[in-house]
Length: 173
Image (cartoon, rainbow, N blue to C red):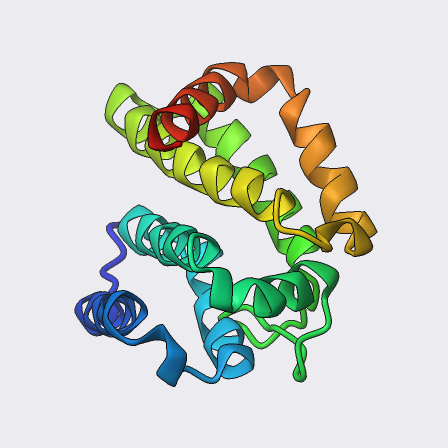
């Protein structure tokens, strides 16, 4: 059986709209609400939406005026618990990040070459984002998040993606 994801075009349009807002006027966003909805994009089964979500977070991580909201996100201090698409509470970003990395490592080991390439690119975007977030002043207060990112940096299963993410970040500096 082939499963058809009927709401996919609508989700893509919603995430495209959010990405436009992040680029054009991030100061207009209620960041707690924004994170509440976009964290679901990290856990989405569609790679395009996951990649768009990490692109948005990377843009936010490059904006000094939004550093405080990223510290709160990393520390799990969002006003409302973050939930996945099934309504299950995931709460803190470090838990979402851990689930994301586990899922991508499985995909990278078992998938076809096209799926592997997409998963690798998506993982690289996520790594660039969290490596940038860890450098935000005061992020050390989000101990579970920073500890997890430190562990991820040493994960052999995604060593190639880690190296590529570090090179891409160096090129941006």
